[in-house]
Amino acid sequence: MGSREKNLSFDPAPFRIGIDLVEVGKVRKIFERREAVRESIFTSEELRCSWEQKDPYVCLAALLAVKEALFKALGTGLSGEMDWRDVEVQRGTSGTPVLRLWRKTAQLAQEMGVVKYALSLSHTKDYGIAMVLLELAAGQKPLTPQGSIPETDLNLI
Image (cartoon, rainbow, N blue to C red; front, side, top):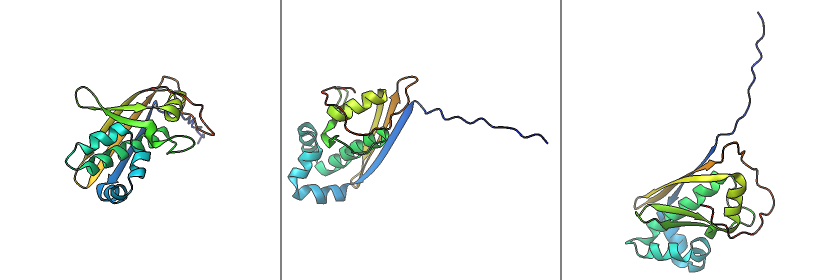
């Protein structure tokens, strides 16, 4: 019997995905007492929109899930000089969520070749959940981020 040699090669998918689930009760417990912590994680616009809701902590849980999901999709977690507020969720004209990346996180996404994204978020009274799908440019291989990322005001996505 002859031996067959299998040629396996790794071709990274042109997509990166991240998902996160956040418990509203934990968000409420942490953020009710510590306004400074809220302001270090959420942009002023995210906080303003959340406080317009019947229960702002449900909204904050979903927004926190978006930020975590994005960092997972990038494959970095919150690392280096990235900041929570480098990831912002805004309302699009049709009410759909729009993802904006700033400074270090935008620079990293650009270096990774991110060209498009899809964002989905939802919540119940108990949980916020989000999924982020990133599409990389054709032929772009994901980077393994190391060290600091140069300063930028790039609004990539």
